[in-house]
Amino acid sequence: GDFNADQGSEFVKSMEAFTFVDTYTMTGDDGTFGGGFTRPAGPKIDFVLSTQCANIKSAQIIRQQVHGHWPSDHAMVFTQLEKTKLT
Image (cartoon, rainbow, N blue to C red; front, top):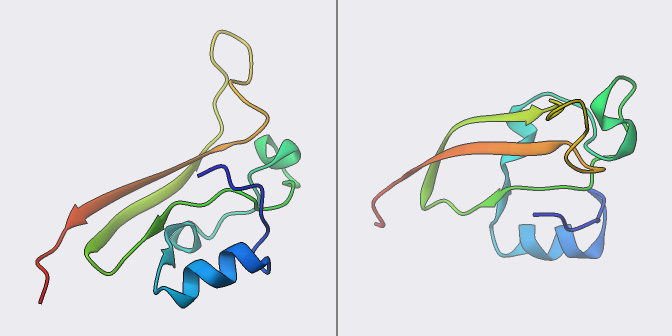
């Protein structure tokens, strides 16, 4: 989501306390805001969070213009999840 919160924020810490994982860490990529469209990237302030009820298949940062324009001031975070069985 577009939480506008950095990795060390109280929001992110509280989500991690509830065992949410940041799928973004799989990308090995930089930030998503402003300069996130080109390198060096701006800060990482966007997250796709998941619980252990899903298997993270892939995650990536999408930096593509649409009809010659950036669709947002944030680069998109895309994650493919697979539902797992609860035990």
